[in-house]
Image 1 (cartoon, rainbow, N blue to C red):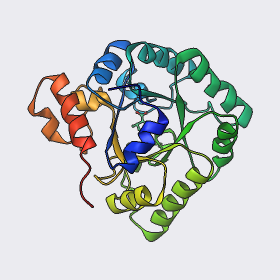
Image 2 (image 1 turned 90 degrees about the vertical axis):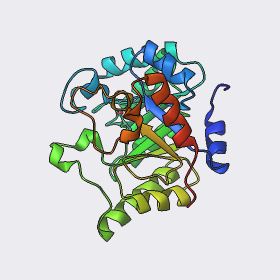
Image 3 (image 1 turned 45 degrees about the vertical axis):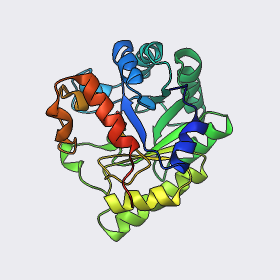
Image 4 (image 1 turned 180 degrees about the horizontal axis):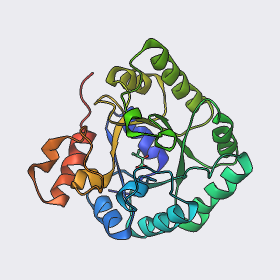
Length: 258
Ligand code: KIV
């Protein structure tokens, strides 16, 4: 496999090849994940849970994210690298730009991810205008979650469905180059994937997205707070993590017929 670019990732969507994405937090796992053919590595602020042992992502700092992004960048060769901007690091346009540039210039990230809602599309379009490629994240937004009871499928009512659809369209219009949809109804995720021209990557959002992302520690079965129910148990048939990674890539790249 050769080095992935956003152009190649877009062509995977056009050619109906599913985009396989996983999180990583250090050089060794990053190398392994890359060698097994994963297309995109996200240094997720999920490190709050799986590395730091917290209940959520709210205590993750810029310094934590910069440190882990640098490590992951060392390990990967071909995968495209996205860094998650932690809570409170992109509240204002100038602050968002300074922090996003640190990920790109100091740590080797090629894109940053922000959780987008109706109040911060201006941040997304500002970063885009300054040539920072941005991945938007909608559906469940972990930085806004206050209790685990809020972790419910989104888009079940017409109002919620229309709101998420609208956010997806606005994210693309504001310049997002990728969209992550977390924990939304399968048919809504399918509709968004068909409607948008940018790749739509799903987590707990059914099989019809342009790609799938998982927290790698969930796939390895080692997450500190337990393994979420949506993680397909077929991966646990083998104890060999290389085989699990390869299976994940294989399954994700073969998109279901719609
Ligand atoms: O932080 C993270 O790992 C994420 C993924 C779950 C999409 O945002």
